[in-house]
View (cartoon, rainbow, N blue to C red):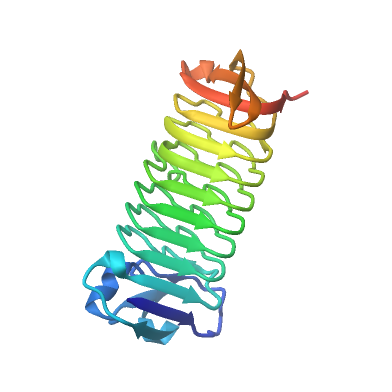
Length: 255
């Protein structure tokens, strides 16, 4: 079953649309769903041109395709547990909140908190992601708990903050404080970042580029071979009695 949702043009397009109802399993009962634009509730067909091909008895067999100006569409895939969502452009904040299964693929850029506190499933972003990708919400103690997030562009600040499980891979650079407060799980940054893994307690963080502003409370262990790369291994963060592992290609301390 394929559900195609094409965003309709709207006046005051800067107003975001809260779209937590856009989850594959909800379409098993039809398209009589609603979204919120500011304080106004809209029927799904007021915000989108809706078309449905085929049928399905299980959420696993439902694909939702989003097209048009979707950059201000928030909370798509929240609590998603099966099926597939394909976003042909960019997506707004909180995409994939708390998801536990299925796949979300974003062909453009993603706004903040992509994969926030997700527990399973797969998110792929072909563009860049903003701050707090795969992290917890402000004040939370645990971020992403399971699943996989893969970003083919660059990531903003606080990537995978409080990571508690799963795997996060960024093929470009990341911003400041990547992997801060990691509990467990794995973070891989193919490019450069600054102050990675600050205050980590456990887990693993790999930086295939340069770790700028390296946190001084990590203990250097030596070098290791990892996927054909020679990386420098550190353990810490000792300031938090942490037992995590940080592996970097190169590093620079602050002046």
